[in-house]
Length: 253
Image 1: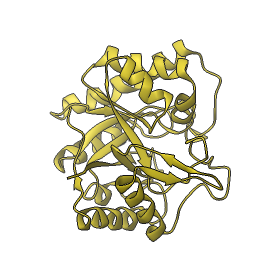
Image 2: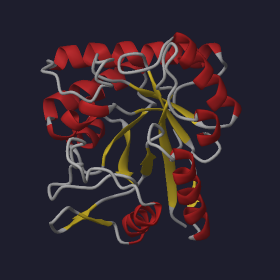
Image 3: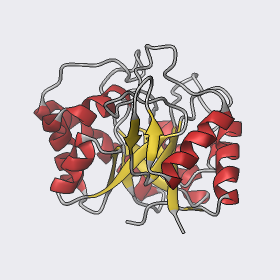
């Protein structure tokens, strides 16, 4: 039986700004990537999201970002490996504090937005992120784009890694995600998203935009909680996985 983790980015509101229905989304996913304050989130939001995830038995992960609150962490920045190490370690530590206070612990780390996409191709940056994760807690699982430099860096550092695939994103011929600046970056049709997920699980392949099939390994599947209709999207994908006999569970640590 194929086992697949279903993860979702959460805790991405701050102050009076609310984003996503995390309470309901947590009924459908098995791992929560919680914003750590650099692209979204504030102390109260971190605390509440950690508490809620623990209550619902969902694995808790840190979702560190570039320091870009206004741009939601989706704008590239020229950061050094040392800076990346420090900002990732800082953010993991912040979320881990809440997890410990709430009687739980972190299970994984998944970089957010531009940091994630940069580390998918930049081996030096990926190594800095992997080292920060290892130095904080070598038991943590590092999530990265399937087949990316980030996954390779995690493996080289001796970490357990999870190859991540996406239900609601399109792919480029080199295996990278289509930039959000392009109109065809997102898949809004749940039926098309489900078909893409099924093929990634059953065949280990995904169709690229105007290009060949890409070979992918699907350990964990991402759903974006900030997208309109995210709850229904998550519900339908979870139902399709259950119907196909796929075991949906968090990646063991």
